[in-house]
Each structure stands twice: as structure tokens, then as C-alpha cells.
Amino acid sequence: MNYLTLYQSGELLKRVRTAYARLAACDLCPHDCGVNRLQGERGICGAGAHPAIASANVHNGEEPPISGSRGSGTIFLTGCSLKCRFCQNFPISQMGNGEVITTKVLADRILKLQQRGVHNINLVTPTHYVPQILAALYLAIPQGFRLPLVWNSSGYEKVDTLALLDGVVDVFLPDMKYADNGTAERISSAPGYADINRPAVAEMLRQVGHLKLDDEGLAVKGLIIRHLVLPGGLAETRKTLSWIAGNLGTATHISLMRQYFPAHQAVGMPVLGRKLTDDEYDEALEALEEFDLDNGWVQD
Image (cartoon, one colour):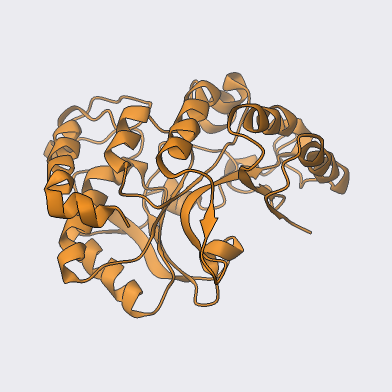
């Protein structure tokens, strides 16, 4: 946990201040909304000056090195910089469901999860709350916080925002959703997703390296990439896996997910309105083998 060194040196407090200053004309995510969140203005993500969370609980449904035997201390943050038409968590990500809290309360929730014996703190959709998360961490460390931090994000991230997390985050768990910018904009309102996502994930790898496990098989540091296979080849899975192998290396850990089902606006839509077929997922598995991406997890 390098965040201890950053705390002791004063660097963490400096980053808290730098991050909060960016809220005055918010540019934390690629949308660059420019709204003054410190004055209550809100951009695409819907977030204001204070953090908002939908839940903070023990979660056992993540990848095995994240959930382990005692679960992951998972905090679902309200809002999102994407507007995926098929989002299964749309009440939280797009409708604003959640509780607005202070950074002190967020720190308390983190510490309570640690007291429950979880293996890590897993921040879900955290990008638009970088300042508040850094501030909560600054408050939690002197009270004994010592768990690995997991950054569970959409992968729609700016490299200069990720720089604020260098040495703070232990495990990056980003999505690589799309290989085509047009598809990303049409389905998730995420202009330039592929061009933004790829350098962001490369920066994550630079910061934490490939996944490292302890003697119990738990993630202590590193990168795990999630890719949800979509019906009709909309995610262009083969292109994404080819890019990973060629640019990040075949040691990269990948969680290849098949749990897509029509939700939110996808219900009744062409292509997105149906579940994934076995043949479509089998094609994704074949691409994993083709590109020698042997590390990670697949679903039955």
C-alpha cells in the first residue's frame, strides 16, 4: 500500500487539493464538462461537490482474487460518466439513486468494511469522485486503514486524472468495453471511447504492473481487465483482445464476461434486445486462445 508513503510525505494531501481544484471547472473525465461542481453545478455524471453512494457492503461475486474467502468491501458510487443503454445498474448510474454523504462519512464506511474482515476496498464507478475518495483516504489512514484499494471503473478515464491515483490504487479493474468509437458513442454516449480507453489502461498497467497474488491467491497489486461480450459482435471482442496481447502483453489477466442480458433501454432494441448466444461466447473464447491470453477467468 504505497498510499501510506504518500500520506507520510504530504503528497497525498497535495493531491487532494489538486483534485478538488479541478472541480471548479470539472475536467476529471473525458467529457470535460467544465461545470463548477463546488458551486452545485452538475455535468453528465450527475455528481456534485460531495460523494454519493448507493451501498457499502461485503460482496462475494467478484473475480476470485478480489472476493477471496471473506469478500470484497464494495462501495457502489452514484452516477457515471457513461450512459450505457443496457446498464444493469441504471438506477444507481443514471437515475441518481444513492445517499449524499461527506468525505468523513465515506472514510467511516471504508473503515467499517475493514472491521468486517474484507480483503480490500472495491470502489465501483469511482472516476467522478477522485477528489472525495482521496480526501476520505486521507482521513482513514491515520485511523488505521491498511487494505488494498481496487479501482473498479468503466475504463473511460483521462491519463492526467489517473496520475492522481499513482501509488494510491493497488488493483485496477477497468472495463475495455468497445473497440469502435462510433459504437461506444451510440450505445454508451462515450465519444472516443476506444481511443481514450486504451492509453488509460496502458497507464494503469504502468502504475501497478501485471497482477500479483499473495500466498492465499488474493490480489495485492496489478491489473485485471474486464470485457463484456455483447450480442451481434457489438463489442468487437477479437479486436480488443488482439490489442491487449500486442500492447499490454500476454501476461495480462482478463475477465471475459458472458452475463449480458437486455436491461434498461436495451429491452426491445435490435441486437441489444437479446441475450448472448453460446456461439458468440465460444468465438470470444477462441480469440483468447488465438492471442495466447491464458491468464484470467471465463464464465460457464
